[in-house]
Length: 492
Ligand code: NAD
Image 1 (cartoon, helix red, strand yellow):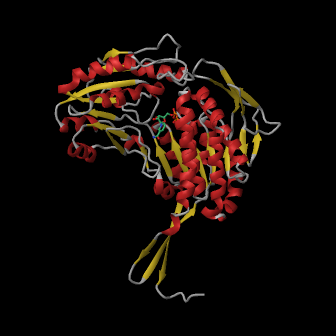
Image 2 (cartoon, rainbow, N blue to C red; image 1 turned 180 degrees about the vertical axis):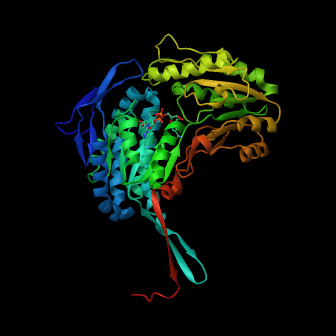
Image 3 (tube, helix red, strand yellow; image 1 turned 135 degrees about the vertical axis):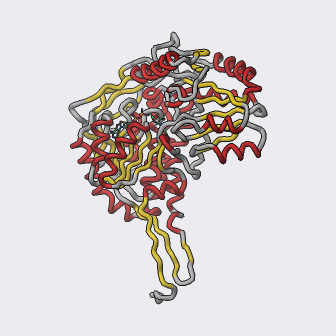
């Protein structure tokens, strides 16, 4: 990676990472810093610049200054820059994966392949799609309507710590392809891969100021960003609590927001399901410390197979290999931070106080204080906190049902609505269930299919709006309809 000679850097598992901001194409370091430790072994990774409102001001000013020229390039003019950026992500696979794994604790196998590939595709896909976005013509008897997707200005992009590489590129891709410029506020518990992305943006020749990164805390840099008067869009992925704070800031200027938030997703297993498939998908909720927004954390199992399913689930979960995520054999990695571990433990403790039963798990492994055991919580009473609120750890609740109506009633019993899984071999049942479940995504006999062209997002506490495919451009662009009376414009 290329970092400026005078930029402060840290070495993270052999990779040089700049620890400052990236504003107007230049590195800038703050005197105030915050420490970043690896969740894998607690090792100190870096002291990262702690951004202030003044840094945000400068970053937004740089993005605003860069906007007219970037917008004027049009999709074709922006295309080569974005494709080069996408290529560079693949060329720097090892560095990106190494740092993402050290910073987040996600398996190296996963970051090296899926996360890097997907991050590159996030850029390329939207660069391609933007070429076709202004083609829409709606004919009516007297006029022809030409639909334009115009760039809207400076976007605030805010991401969480559980997959910063993939989630930041998922925002940068459509934002830049749409012709907007951006200020990114990376997550403070895992800020380092975003810094590598800044280097690649510079190396791709993307003009200075088009993408800026300000490191720091949510309540400081993040809040200053969403309150900034020159921000035209806010794309936020994170918790519902933070989304509410951001919505209040956005309300003052009616800034459009896109919220991709938490989940409490049901995983519904019918008696006619392929049980091997269903079990293998159910245990995914324990991987990566259970820190996935779409994880099926509420298992709803048809009563007639409950005993058999629990036996198989217990056996499979017990065999999952816990350990260092850099080891390819590892399936269960650490939680991100001691504060988060305490939060997860708090949910489990309160569940027990509420009368739930911990069938297995419920605490940490000997491997380290952040390695939390896969945990199955039974004896759930309706309305209990553990049934209602996102834990964001490897903790799954267990409930059984007899009929489709009961399954729907349980599935729709929380205020979240991000995703859901249905395991059955009946197409009719799958479609009946899918129509009645309140969630933005329904996965039938599969999990976490995030097709780039399809809408992604949730309802209720899980979010507002959809991104993916043209839905991303609906959000990032100012959509304009130009109605031209037929034959009123003689050809030039
Ligand atoms: P969080 O809401 O605490 O923080 C997310 C980001 O917001 C961080 O960068 C943080 O610094 C910033 N932030 C915090 N306060 C802010 C403020 N007042 N103004 C502006 N920015 C602020 O969430 P988290 O703990 O980092 O992430 C976990 C949550 O993210 C979970 O709820 C998870 O389900 C959700 N998530 C959702 C998706 C999705 O696609 N729906 C994907 C990943 C994670």
